[in-house]
Structures are given as structure tokens and as C-alpha cells.
Length: 520
Image 1 (cartoon, rainbow, N blue to C red):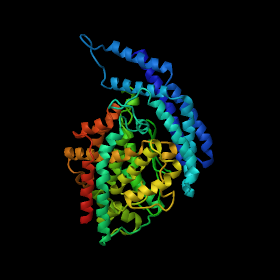
Image 2: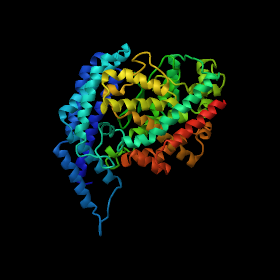
Image 3: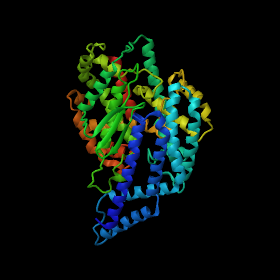
Image 4: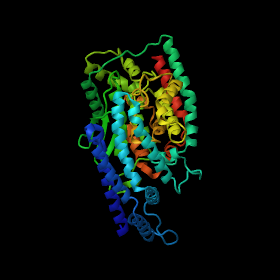
């Protein structure tokens, strides 16, 4: 390895170390940090953000990238007599490094620090406002975050265009870190069939309920039992306490703090006895993806090439384990004896009863607790509101009313208070505009990848009935996880499934599941 390449790898390693320190502080902030620590934590994170920005934007770093590229070209010249590209990941990795360098240099360092502090304040105020169900407490912080993100988008957009050659909008620019090359036009093509069909499927469920179809009984599982079931699930799926930790937080999440340090959280929700179990399955799916990414030290620049393809792909992995596995009929049949033994009774009456309980198909106000039919409508609501806040004329102060109006239009429900409505999600408290569509893209990607998995190995339900969960992970580790950022989300789906991403496989999966649930 040449000197310039070694120096670049060393520099990137230092950058990743600093980033992991910031991630560690973030994990603590969301799990154990006392509320009064938020101001100091904001200052800590702002300092790290400024240092990271400096490392990723200075002239010395730019020179390192170009020196490494030239060294590589001299060592492996193309054309007659040359031995060509030494590793297929090199051109893509250098492209990603230059792209990130350009975006970092476009940003004002002062803005970077201000934004991180605003995120810390926003998160703290959001927690308090949600506890009190008082959006007015949070509104000033949200106004500040929107203003800062708009300014950031205007800086990042300099010299950048979308795949169609046109300038990206504010929302599209902010969405790039989550979904590279995404556009509102692409989302319109994918989401329009969902906006049309999902309400029809919900109406079908509501009609059946009004005709006297049995609704799931309310059930309370003791908190200790819920946590015990969560840990049992993780142990079944390969949880290794030497490299992974399960904690609790106000909002479930997963993060990676180092090459052998994977964190995930869950939460107990009163009145939702399966919430922690399903959230744990979801977050472990995220963690399994992180653990399977190509980040070994012997690979060419583990970062950024070894990072997740996109958050849509990331969500496809978590939704696969939550919905295709933990909510499946075969899984319910395997786990019914465990639930029954742990509780000491059988309130479900049968494995089919547990399966119905894990799939209530009952539209609710909360996105995280939503069933598979209504989940997409929760995302469409947030996506439309983000566009209105960032690019339209919706004032922050009018957000609760507009949220409630759209909730009624899409789901036929009206929140009783702000905590049930526009304060339920953590994302806007951290200025994460552009993230929500990744959840719905994840459902579409999961369905299409599942079709490819079944094409190669047979029905997922049949393999689960045989206890062959590990083989499903092996398939993902072979076909999905190793790709990292060598491709974007759309390219990954087409490469693995053989077809462009579409809403059709997801809608087909939902209709088939609804038919089977109605038949039980």
C-alpha cells in the first residue's frame, strides 16, 4: 500500500473514531442522561461536530484524497500494458469521499455547531412538551431547526443537481444523507398507488369489524415478562452480549458505536402488550444489517463504502424481521407455547389467536404501534407535512391543527391531544427532515427482497415453520448486506430482485395477509 493511501486511511480512521464518540454521547442522551444534562451535552456534541466538519473539509484532507487517487492510478495504470483497477470498490469509494468533501466544504462551520446545539435543545424540549402534551413549548425549537435546516440545504445545494440534472429542492437536499438520489418525483410514483389502495384496504377491515368480526381482547403483559420475552427473542436470533446491549429509551432505536459495539433500545408501552417485543425485533433487524456490512479492516477503506446503502434499505432489514418474521403465522405457532408458559395462561386460546393479536389491523394514532395496513398512511401524513413546513406556507404554530386534519382524512382518527398527535415522533426534535419516507420505502424494499428470497429458497412461512430462521439471515448476508454503499437503494433492489422498485409486491403481500387473517 502506498504512503498517500495509508495516510488517507489513517485520517478516515480518526474521523470514524470522533464520529463514534458523538454516537456514544447520543446513545447516553437517549437512555440514561438526566434531563438537566442537555445543555452541556449540546455543547459537547457541537464541539465534536465542528471538529468532524474541520477534518472532513480542510485543504489537507482534500489533498490526501487526490494524492491517494494519483498513487492508485500510477500503481495500476489503465490501458495497454497496465493492470487496471486493483479493487472494484476504489472508484466508488473515491467518488463518495469527494462528494462528502464537497458537501462539507459548502457548509459554514458556525452553522454546523449551531445546528447540533439546536438539535440537543430540541430533543430536550420535545421530551418535556410531549410529557405535558403542550406543542407550544416545543414550537420555538422547531422553528429554529427549520430555519437552520433551510440554510443548510441552501449551502449544500451549491453545485449539486439531481439525477435529472435539475437543482434539488430544499426537502430533497436534506433527504440525500438518508436516501441518495431520491426525488419527490420518484416518491410520487411509488407512493401514489399506496395513497389510493391503503385506505381501501382499511375500509375493508372496518367494514368487516362493523359486521361483528371479532376484535382482539385487551391484554396486559407484566413489564418484567415483556422484557424477558424480548431477551429470549434476541438470544434466539444470535444476540451476543459481548458485542451488543439492549437498553430502554423513550423512542426505540439502534446505533453502532464501534466495530464490536452494537446498541439497541426498546420501550414498554402501557396498553400495547406486544410493542416492546416487536420493537426489539425491529431494532435487532437494524443491528443485524449493521453487523453484516463490509467493514472489515482488510477491505479498501471501510468508510464510507462499508456504510449502509440507504435508510430505506436499513428499514427494509428491520421491517423484514419485525413484519415478515415476528408477525408471521408460522412464528406465532412456534412462539405460542412460550408466551403461554411465560404468562401462565392462554388468553389467546390458540396459536392463531396469538397471530391475530400480533396483527390487529386496527388503525391507531401512533406510528410506532401502527399495523402494516395503516403504517404507510402515517408516513404519507408526515411526508406531506414536512414538505409544507419546509417548502410550503405551513407555519409551525399551525402544525397541530393540520396534523389532526390529515389524520382524519387518511385514517379517520383525531388525536385527543398533542402527545397523541404531532409530538409523538422524535425526528423533528432533531431536525431530521427527509427521513420519514425511508420507513415506507423500507416496506416496499422488504417486500421485493422477500420475493427474491422466496424465489431462491421457497416460502418464508414454510422455512419459519421448520425453524430455519438462520438460513434467512444467511441469504441476506450473501445478497444484501455486503453491498454497502457500492450501490444506491434503487440499484440494490434491481440487482437483487431483477426488477425496479415498485409498490406492487408490498400491496400484494398486504392483500394476501389480510385474506389469510380474515380466514382464521
